[in-house]
Amino acid sequence: MPDWTKPMQQTFEYYIVDPGTWKNKQKVDVVTSSSIERDSESDTLGSATIDVTGTIDECYIRIYLVTIQNRIKESFPLGTYLVQTPSYSFDGKIQTSSLDAYTPLMELKEKYLPIGYSLFKDPPCEIMDTAYRLARENMRAPVSSTNCKETLEDDFVANVDDTYLKFLTDLISKAKYEFEIDELGQILFSPIQDIEGLQPVWTYNDDNSSILYPDISMERDLYGIPNVVEVVYSTGNTYKEARVVNEDENSPTSIKNRGREIIYRETNPNLVGNPTSYQIKDYAEQLLKSKSSLEFTVSYSHGYCPVRVGDCVRLNYERAGITDIKAKVISQSISCTSGCKVTEKAVFTRKFWG
Image 1 (cartoon, rainbow, N blue to C red):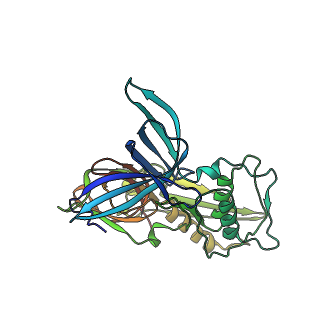
Image 2 (image 1 turned 180 degrees about the vertical axis):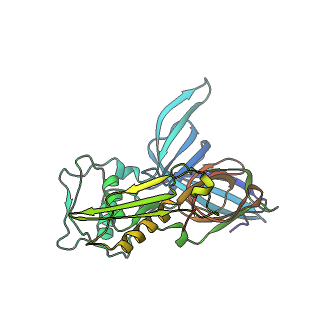
Image 3 (image 1 turned 90 degrees about the vertical axis):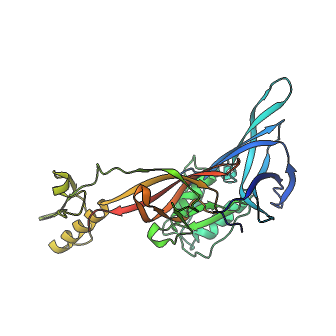
């Protein structure tokens, strides 16, 4: 593994992938440029664009970053994509094509389930084993199984317009899993985790050996965060209420610091039985704590390093006032050119009360 903070030579290689064996079959020498988009909010988790001279029929192409450092040559896969040629141009000498490229999950997105397809809770239906089987049967990419034995609590019926991707995404979420794709194009099932439960795989800082570019931006919106929560519980002849107020001088969303009350009122609390006044008060406090959390989005760029979407990173960018922050990467845009610049977004949460 090279030292990603030190100088190195970088080039890119492309290979057609055999969909039967999922191994490289043929090197492609006509690629002029490419870019990769990894996005946790996209249903197929990303896409790519590959520009070539001539044309290439529909196939899977695997992209590699090739490094040479201290005379050691190494190759690192960046992604495996199903390419199609929607258009081409000819300048009188050379024909060029821009290939739209999709992750292997596109094969699940293209197929609809049989109308009325259902999974039944009895006999016990293992969620992840069923998802593994359906994914493996309906796509060519390799699929990895899990040891999760979670079963359905209710019957699970497909909507008439459900694709396999939509159906399976909804299904595995019931076991608190989500799809993931590695750089070789293999389909994985990843447990959904909070940022607090993750450990950083990389630290971005602003020292002299940093691969972090100087420009960085942060988005946040404090507007809708309440500093007062009111809970009203009413059933039959019973009426109870609780009011919790954020009066913390150190909280930027408190009544004192904002100069006004911003009230959130809940009239249908999720409480079981006949709750006491203390339980309603505690419910209101917990609700204000959760409502006082704000998600920040940080955008930055860096030289390539083995960080993937879904990974946790630590941000130490003191010049921008960002110190020792754990954040989860949600998207990456990789420019497969000299320097292999990666433009990245990550999110983290801060609590302003409680």
